[in-house]
Length: 411
Image (cartoon, helix red, strand yellow):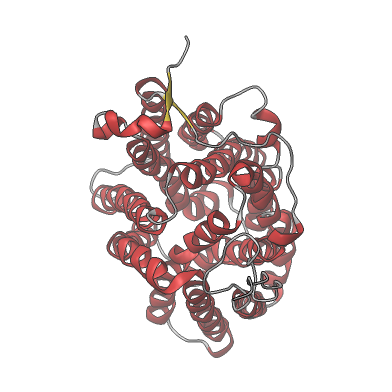
């Protein structure tokens, strides 16, 4: 079947739901139906079904991040598959792999299924970021990206709300929940493949790897963000289950609160980035994360209680939602043809630490959980220092405050 192509410049003539923004909104809703549900159940599932310890969960997340490290492979796939189609196919793979997760309740089985779902997730996210930056005008990008954060949060909120309300009363099983969530994601992705035209971007994308010296600060921030994010994703929720004995519905309730806050704050953060700029937004995020990770370490070192841990988990998640400011920073400094290959390279850089850090820190966790969160605080503080190098008005030739200013014409 041949999919219709449509010039992006004429997208306003389509019904509103069939425009590029409608596609981005629908896929932003489909992805968390599978991924957020998988994430909400993961820690309880691996502990109850496969008897994971800290080392096992570290290895699981190391395997999960390998496709992120190999996201640069998107560039090769774009030689034979259109970017929009690749994103939808990756989303279908995420849904199908999530649907069968509970069929493999062993370390080896979980690792294989996780690897497949991770290929779908990371390749979708790589392409999705590229399409967002190509399709959205620079002046509207922060506001629309903020709304997309809110859409994803609202979808996750609905999924988590259903879990909290029905897990115990209906005696749900991991099998049923994974099948429903993954299957729904795959069906929505298939609808996106069939119902939307293939939008022709204004600028043809380079089909080769792009590494430019002037993007160095963006690469550094991506590396630090990836290392810091791994510690949060792997160990923050695991702490709530291992140390405080949270049940599935209690862990899900935490996620529900997180996404309720993000649903409300997403558009606010979009306006914040648009008004104050990427530098101030990212420095605010990283300063907050530094304090949160230090407090996490204090929970283990000083024996602080569960209420503080739960509160910090919510605050932590709220700060992470500001990360889309990195996308708009790239959009402002990159050549238009560099968006797709640079997004792929950035995902690979973001996951360099992810390949070894979870497994290595899993062993450290067995000795000192506080040290794991202390390292995260150091990474967050380093990120704040790096973000201070972003100019107030980044653009090509003015990517960092260290860039040599362009010569001004004689008066």
